[in-house]
Amino acid sequence: MNGPFYINGWIGEEASLIFALVIGVAFGFFLERAGLGSAKKLAAQFYGTDMTVFKMMFTAIVTAMIGLFWLDLFGVMNLELVYLTPTYLAPQLIGGLVFGVGFIIGGYCPGTSCVAGATGSLDGWMNVLGMLSGILIFGELYPLLEEFYNATPMGELTLDDYFQLPSGVMVFVLVMVALAGFWASGKIESKTPSKNEFKS
Image (cartoon, rainbow, N blue to C red; front, side, top):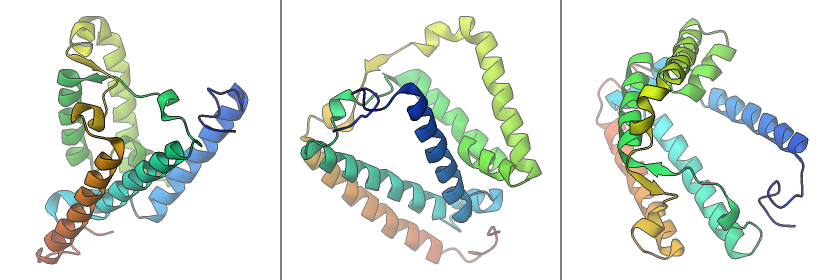
C-alpha cells in the first residue's frame, strides 16, 4: 500500500472526509496549544519581538518536506500523484500582498482566526466574518476578475523544477535556509528591547 491513499483507491470519499476532519481538528488544537490563537502573539512577529509563528510554520514545512522526500524515495508515497496548486504569478503575488496586509491589520491568518474564534475570541470572530465576506465579494466579482485571476500561468511549478536541481539538493538547500532563518530569528528576538510587549 502506498500513498496518496484516495487516488490509489485505498480509501473512499467518506473516509477521506473523516481524515480531513481529524487532521483539521488536530491542526487547530496544536495551533492553539502553541499560542497562535492570540493576535498579540501573531502580530509580535512583525515587530520582531516574538518569532514563534515563523519558527513553528517553517518547522512544519521543513518536516513535511523531508518526510515526503523520504517516503517518495522509498516508494511509500508517489509524489507524482500529489496535487499541486498551479502557479499564476501575478494574481498570486497580489493575493499574497493582500493576505499580508490583512494579517498585519487583523492580527490573524485564516487558520488562526478560526482557532481564535473557536475559543470565543471576539476579534477572531470578526476576522472570520471578514474572511467570509471577502470570499463572498470575490465570488460575486469573479466574472470581472477572471482574466486577471488566470493571468501569467506557470503550471504546477516546484522549486526543484524552476531551478533545475535534483529534489534531494533542493531539500538540503531549504533545510539550510530554515536553519539560517531560525538563527536569524533568534538574533532578532534577542536584540528587541521590549521582547514581552506583545505576548499574551
